[in-house]
Amino acid sequence: MKRILCFNKIALPLLVVLFVSCGKSFTDLAPISNANTNNFYKTEADFESGITAAMNTLYGVYAPEGPVSYTGELMGDNATLYIIAGAQADKHAFRDYAIQTPNTMVYAFWRQFYSALFAVNTVLDKLPAATQLDVEYKRVAEAEMRFLRGLYYFNMARLWGGVPLVTKAVAAQEAYSILRSSEAEVYNLVKADLQYAVDNLPVSANVKLVGRPTKGAAQTVLGEVYLTLGDKQAAASNLLEVYNSGQYALQSTFAGVWGPTVKNTKEAVFEIQYAANAATGTHSPYHQFFFPNVNALGFSGVGMNQVTDDLYNEYESGDPRRDITIALGYQSGATFLQQKHFQKWAHPNAAINGTTLLANNDFMVYRFADVLLMLTEATGDVQYMNQVRSRVGLPLWGTAGYPVSKYGTVALALEHEARMELAGEFKRWFLLKRLNRAIPVLTAKGKPVTEEKLVLPIPDIVRLQNSQITQNTGY
Image: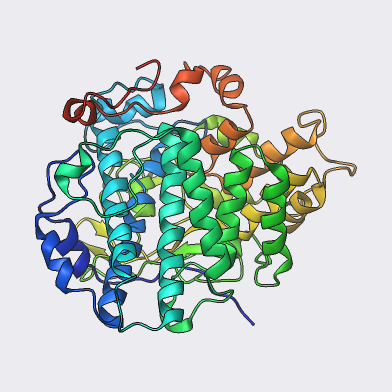
């Protein structure tokens, strides 16, 4: 049976209610309208609205200018910035490893995560007392919310190390007293939440609720968590269950992974869905934001994550992924102007509303190619990585024709293959960090990286509101 693992496209009314007029705490966790939630969460319909609001926070966390994009690509070697809309200096600082504690983007990302966690924790807080819900519904709903909480704290631990652990929807005044937990304590919560999700989420998504996380999604995230922690045995155990579940498969071609009508294939493990719709605001933003900062095609490109020559030049001769992943430039009237940019999320001939491109492309947070590459990372077995290479017709590791002179170990081959396969998908920096390769790789390419700069600073505003919150070393 075909497995669908993706994120449902939904309107945002409750999200607006929850997050408008936030309190002044550093975590922005308690909206003034918080009291209204006490009378809201009674029926299954109420909880569906709350879960919808929590799931909608994925749109921000994985946005093209969200925290995972800025770090996962821009702090690596796949992407750069030229001219970009907004606060130039604060954005270029990610590329240049020049981030300072007042950086407005870092604070925006901090607030974004804690606002998302408020939505998640609100549902979790209300579930135990919801007497109108049956036991099975409550169990799965808790697992869905703990999946999101585990995913978000995993990202926060990778960005900041230890952070304040908030596991309930606290009032503004309470937030001031919450200090940073250690990185180990954050990861303990991440593992507990994701393991609960693994144990309680369904194997297959409910076709009426497309977009909810399932067991395979939770196991995939948990596998990456264990890789990040250096526990390859636990990582392999989770990832092999995904591999052997029969729920997933690679698309037959790499081109078949992409396109505005390619949705919810068996390659998708966790997918955020979009629709080319101006009224609900759920159109896909990736192509417009990754397009150069020009208006040559009738929409306003933003200029985020422009492709480096270094990435383009690493593709092997004959690798079809290069030209599917990267556009060399754009047509401006009769002139073709060169500026490499990601085109995995291109929607040719999409409607334009004003200067906004109404693209229809989904965004896969995790796909089966991730699972295969992480399995080689966890086990050292090249059979999984070779499946990714086989799809694009390249010589397999261990056979004649493989560029062994460049990638002479399984570890280097895996690092190369993941870069080529997942370019632009917010993975590169995190992979380099967990392989202990970020400093040697990036310093060789002129980035002033140090161990201390592999985490972001705690925002100044956070520490002004509570001076007992410690700063990361080096800031």
